Image 1 (spheres, rainbow, N blue to C red):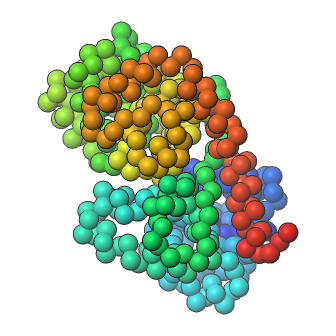
Image 2: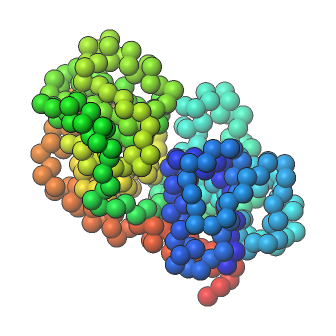
Image 3: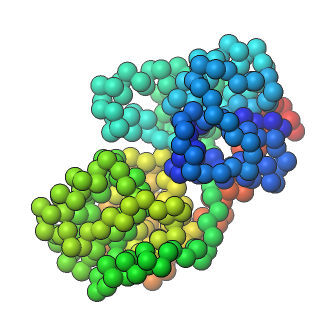
Length: 352
C-alpha cells in the first residue's frame, strides 16, 4: 500500500513523534511504501521513509498514493485547498485530530482568532473520507461535528525500559536539585494550556517538594516570576529542551500533568511505560479515557486537591503505576496503533 503523510514540520513534538512511530511500523512490519511531506523548515526527527518539504500551494503527486493522511491544521487545509485534484486521483483522504481544537486554538491564538480558524478546519474535515480521534472523550467532544466517518484510534509508541541514560552533567544537576526533596517533574512545551502555575502554587504549601521542568516555551519567564513571587524559586528549575525527554522521567518521584486541555499526550504514555506514578488534572480526555485505576487525579485549580493527589502518589509503591504499565503494554504500543491504522486503510480501500 502507498501512503502519503502530510505534517506541519518534522519538529520534535508529540504528533510528529507519533507519526514517526506509525510510519516505522507500517514500513518495517506491514511492507507499506510511505512518504512524509512537511511545510516548515524544522527537522528534528528522522523517518524510516522518504521525506520532502513542500509549499502550501504546490500539489504533490496525489495519484501516486492509495491514502493521503494529514495531521494538524495546515495539512488539513492543504487537503481542502487541493481537494479537487485529490478527488480526481481517486485516493482516500484521512485526517487525525490530535487535540481539542476549540480549547487549544483559544489558548494559542486567543478566542477571537480561534473562532475565525475553526470553521475552515471543520470544512476541511467534511472533505475527508475518514477522520480519526484519539479517545472516546474526544469523540464525545466532537459529537456535533459532521464527519463522513469517524473512528477512535489511540496513540501508541514504544519506549525503551530502562530508559537510555541522560548526560552526566544533567544527571549531576538533577540529583543536586533533588537532594532532600521529593521531586515532581514534567516534560512539556511551556504554554498556558499546560497549567504549570498550579505546581508552583503547590510548592508554597509543600516545603518538601521540588519541581523540575524539561522543556521550554513562551510561559518560561512568567513561571519564573511566579516562583519568585511565591518564594519557591529555589525549588523550581527549568532545565530547558532535551532530546528524548522521556529519559529524565525515571528520575522523578512522580510525574505531574496539570494540563487544562489535552488530546492524548505523548508524555502520558511515556510515564506509563516507565512505571512512574502520575498525577494529572481530571479533564475528560484523561479521566474518562483511563478511569481511576492508573493515575491520581485532581480538579483544575484546586491546589488542596492537587496536594492530596501528590501525597497519594508518594505512597504508590508501584501499585497504580504498575497497573498503568500493564495497560500501556496491551493498548498503547506502536504495534497496536499501526495495526489499527492498517485495518482502517484496508477498510477504506475494500481490502479484506
